[in-house]
Length: 114
Length: 114
Image 1: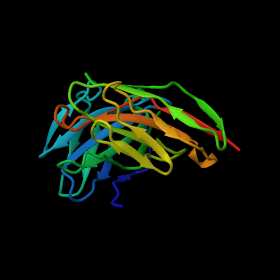
Image 2: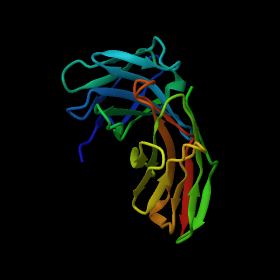
Image 3: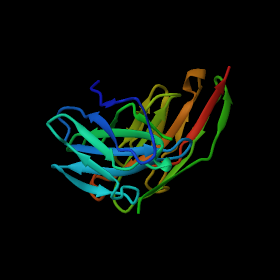
Image 4: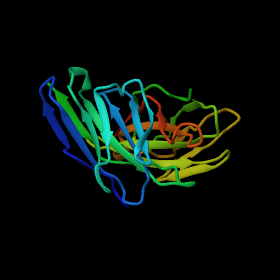
């Protein structure tokens, strides 16, 4: 089965630093998402991206966050100035079009902000 | 907005016991319903899905039936194994109203003891 690939698997950073989380969605997918899961809590939607622009974002996705699809294969999430509460597992997901609404998730990037 | 309510955990069962994890939802449109599983240290994986009323999703001995009249999608398995120990998330996706984002329940932790 095709896979969504995320790198790195673990990222440790100091508070106030910028981090970029990287994702390679499935090649023929057109919808891309970032979700996060704080330890022991629910999976939360951050942002959806389609046709090179954000189609929806949650309240969590404030000005410190941005997403980009810099080329035909990568999809990145940038956090400009990390806070302690940004520590979480970040999941990238992608989806095809039409009746296939299944999300393919990557294995996640564990972000630890110290 | 859309929401998913899952049975609170954790759930602890003996091997070969019957499993039910309740899930109910509210949605403005006609969502597709999903169960995802997260094994220890891993990302989210799709377990099964149902895209319309009365559909039954099944995989690896797990089943869930889309009940529109009760807005439910309960997960069942007749005989659980130790390897089924994981966190189970119920989710819905309404691509017609929500840019295809998924809304997740809080997750239910299942532990199966030999």
